[in-house]
Length: 83
Image (cartoon, rainbow, N blue to C red; front, side, top):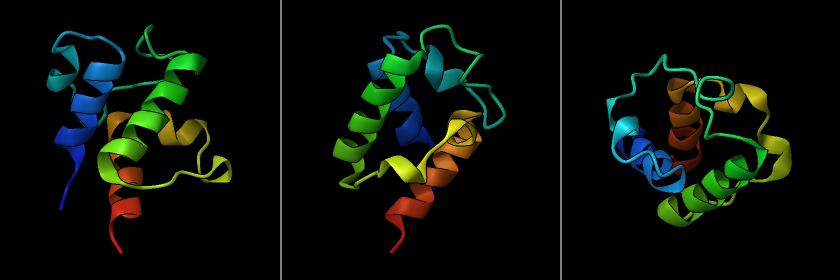
């Protein structure tokens, strides 16, 4: 099951985007595209994703490409929640 809408809700909550994230598309740039997503915010997003989806994200599982776009982040979460 695609988790994109849930990922967008997490982004919206953690980054305090007041509903803006819910309009993002899969090709919307995250790192470098959203000023609110800095290195500290990335940590908050990771923590929120772990809590929301009941997953554990190890440091070596993520890099800049994971947070490149909404699609890459949602794809990562989809992969972690299958199985």
